[in-house]
Amino acid sequence: MSINVVKADGHVEGFQPEKITRTLLRAGASREVSERIIKEIKTRVYDGITTKKILKLVKSLLRKEEARAAMRYDLKGAMMRLGPAGFPFETFVANVLEHYGYKTRLRSILQGRCAKHEVDIIAEEASEERIKRYLIECKYRNTSGTFIDLKDALYTYARFLDLNEASELGKGTKFDGVWLACNTRASYAARRYADCKGMRLLCWLHPKGQGLERLVEEKKLYPVTILPSVDRKTLENLSRAGLMLVKDLIIRDLNTLREKSGVSKEKLRRIIKEAKDLMSEAAS
Image (cartoon, rainbow, N blue to C red; front, side, top):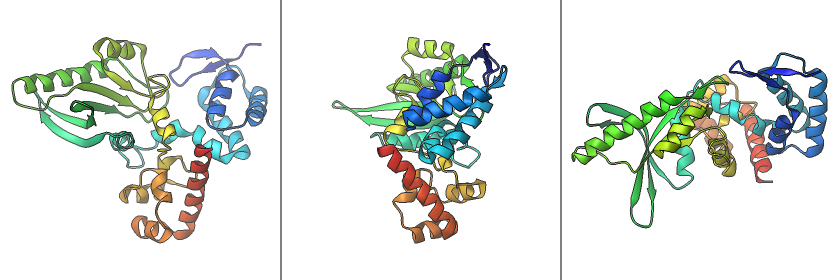
């Protein structure tokens, strides 16, 4: 009997256990553990089950088998929890880009030819000839199944044009390119338009092999929201202290973290243990 799965956006597709296997292996789970989890999942799925329920079940099973891999498996959810935790998504993106050699400036108000614009990120990249400057618009989504769509791409490109038209008149900053970043996926129409206009999309799984998740994984730039012991109250404290990345927690001593965040030492010890486990798994 075929089993249909209801995706977060309401679309229905056949149950594909190989997709789960790929994500488990990528998160660092062993082949043996992945096969055990898939075997268990197959006994529990039913026609009409949602991808949300499958994801919850997979995370629960993986957490019992390999806690470190379970944290990495939850990267997408961790990025969705950034906003409610008080970490603006554009701040996270800028932080990631700085680890790749860009200089960034956040939330700038710039005058275009026809209107003023609040630019989420201005990123500068040093090349052999000169410094290249990019306008980056960030779109944050806190629910799965949502996309950045064509209107987001159109809106972003229109701002880029207006600002560069002002620059041509000697009234503003010239940009060499425009990016649209998001913590979820981009629709086909948005991807097609971006390709046509030479606009870079930085989204979940896009560009293939160079998406936002890959940039995070390659340099272990995990947000603190990925750690299981970091509850809502702790997140508020870490946010006020400006501690956004897991690596921020393990490069400081316990007393400094306690003073900076206001989180108890007992809680911090658990969090730091998880942080070290995660970074160790990422490096293996």
